[in-house]
Length: 436
Image: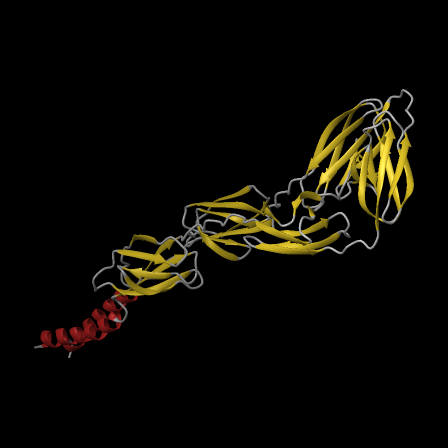
């Protein structure tokens, strides 16, 4: 009977102890770490929550049916799936998922167009100073931006306006030309003939030539040809009549100099000759460079938003060399670079300037240029931190060999202590009964 009483006491103590041990004893946790907040987490197809702050911890019961796979997904990213191992009671299993964005096919730059009408019709249309044809007409394949449209017609005042073009759209420009109040004509001849004619700095053709529908009044007439001095004078154009003007050009003595005429599309480009600034190209016509020594020269044209244009041209005595530049839009300047981060072991959390960006190994393609701080953290390892520069169009690399962290000495398990304490109490009870 005494033995039975002792066993009853021991069993009673164990029944009191084991319920305490059993609280939470069949529960573990699975921690899912991911580089994208808001991503959904599924275990064997069952939704368990969303990633917040880079992770999601899901409680699981070790006595239930085990989960075998996990999936992390979010619209705009490729889904990630992997195997899942159940934790032991009271323990945490950590798995990692890196979501990569689904690439978006960039929309190619769309050009626009400009439709130009004139009243009266048939006006000569220029686009940023370049002649394009007679109105009505459509100017196609125009890069988005702002442009100048000019309409000219004999007997009418010149019409000029600006218009903006957007991608994939058509702008309409209506040019209403006003008649000149009074016009006249000039008949221009020269010795020698076939010389260039410029009226108010605008090229009109070669001698002999009649220039009609000129606004009456005073104008500047210039005539030039190779090997002769330029002829330049003011001329009065009569109302409703034609004035004949004869120009005799004087030959130039033999020399070792010539000219360079520089034109560009669009106009307004800054011009340098052999590295020295010499002026800007006009919107129409040419920039004339006089008394240029014979030989080979370098001409460069620069304009904001356009690539630098450079060409070498040869100058011969008493001759004109022409440079006609069609400027090309310059490519946009890149302000980002790439960054690749790896660690040994892999699977560590990566922070860029204290912002979580993913799990090693990881590569970012669009990091702002400049100096950045990269921090790498992993459970059981010392934190790693480094600064690295990121240059435009280049990829920087950070690689870390993580050092193990100091592991504290584990404490003795409480349940074993309780069992031995219970057995000790039972033994004291038996000895006490024996000596009574």
